[in-house]
Length: 267
Image 1 (cartoon, helix red, strand yellow):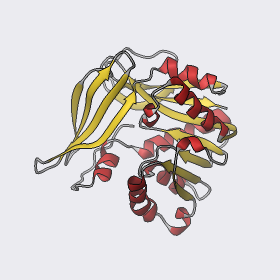
Image 2 (tube, helix red, strand yellow; image 1 turned 30 degrees about the vertical axis):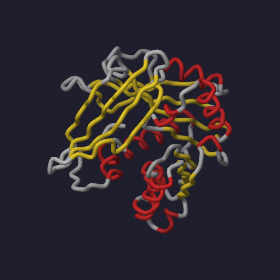
Image 3 (cartoon, helix red, strand yellow; image 1 turned 120 degrees about the vertical axis):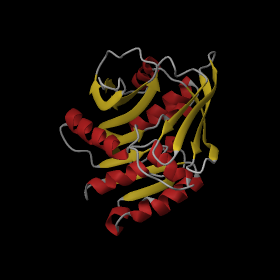
């Protein structure tokens, strides 16, 4: 969810995205620890929805020789990149435990311990019926004690039309919220990159989605048949007044300009 600054000199948009946006080590730490806390056993099988380059699923199979993963996405190009650069970098035995599937996440899968929908990817479902149906298919793809992991974001800056640059070491990551319609809560967003020589990769990634609220998501998860949802709120670093990367279950959040949290939904 948050990035770890690493030096990168590349024009490959997928590498830049992985460096600027993803922190798969911390993400999988959270999934492992939370699943064990909720279910009293380790999770072994995982499905990464809207997987992109399958970076998270790759990290999952690296953690244990007992772990298996299925990574699902509709985008042929990004899956091919992930198959070559992420899955392809694994040992042969690890590759056998990671499968990439091009297709609609709503098609479901054989039951797994955990399903992940991260980086707000599921926000692309714009209507309640669409979102509820997706949640229903996830529930049907989980084992009896399975857990669905999602992230979400919000705050009073979330619906604003803003441009936010962030220094990532050898390049600048730029998040743009280009438009927001308060009538339907739909918005157009872009990711741009500025490279060391000053050149820009404009609209390296494009997103059109709905800014869903936590009450809406929790209600839809309940309607989809999940027995319980929990919110894990990020703590605050007292020195920087920014998020500290530590997420704890809570029913009380802060009215911040921008926040990120995890949700879990239990079968």
